[in-house]
Image 1 (tube, rainbow, N blue to C red):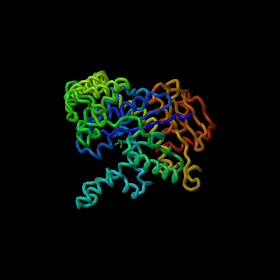
Image 2 (cartoon, protein in one colour):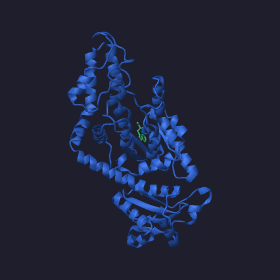
Image 3 (tube, rainbow, N blue to C red):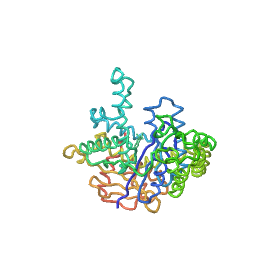
Image 4 (cartoon, rainbow, N blue to C red):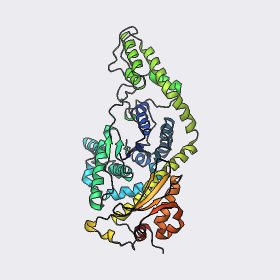
Length: 430
Ligand code: TRP
């Protein structure tokens, strides 16, 4: 079976709360440990600029979210964990995609439409206060996904439309320029709980009812003590249904523990005691993670290094892929006028570099011709950067780099075909 590529982004506009932890972080970290998936997780800081106009908050949120994911067990060695704005190929791809996206499609995006509807209801100009960034949000998101040819995109229900748009945009591009993009699918996790917030409504930053994941223990206790309950007195039997405290407990406790609490409800446990039980159970899971988080957040330079290493891994895919896409749309060195560029219907099958990781943990690349036949195969590199550098050298210098890199190549196709393929990538030599 082919490995599934899973990719998701987290907008760096807030502080992670319990709802994010239970609904996204915890299940995602677990899924990332499965052997048969190749995961890409990134901090969507370009997206944050659409909503947040405060530079310090964008930076702080990026730090907090990165530290949270790492503290919760995301292993940057196993997955590709990076920051969107470290990948300059993303905005470049956004532009390519913008040029195949119907404006009418974007007019129908929920987030944009909601803003317009609100303006209309208030008798304002329909586009009052609406930035082009908000309008373009789905295209930037499509670029995130398509750049890495993700199969599965785990998101909340509110994001399904965006994944559908990414599919449509990919199909338009493929139709015009050849089969470059995988059509992604939304992966909706139905088994994870939606947590209630302090006021009993869904925990959400927009309701201002969240419990931040990593507040100090004492503050966590205080927040839990403030969760709404009904007014039943101690000793009175209580209903688990609709009880925010019960739902929160259930998201952390085992089935047996949950059943025991249900019994205590029926027996009339006082709300204060329920809250104490909930607090202890939450803290039992969170305390060890919090300790890691508190350490990490003290060392932003360590997180920065981790993210930059992740960007390097991501760019080992993004850089050669973007070179191929540039070629596909016609942004080409002027001397590259081989037959493939003039093929029928403007579809330009181009040679391509692929970088990948083998079971042995090493990084490899290969060069394929327009039909997918193997032209070059590298030996294993310990670091993705070294593989990417060798690839970049071949792209930059063309056939003349073959000599220098000869002991890094384990297989070569027909010399003329290799030379012709490398011509596509190399720049004119002044
Ligand atoms: N829009 C997503 C959200 O707000 C974040 C995001 C940005 C994303 N780019 C993505 C999610 C790509 C999945 C894939 O939740």
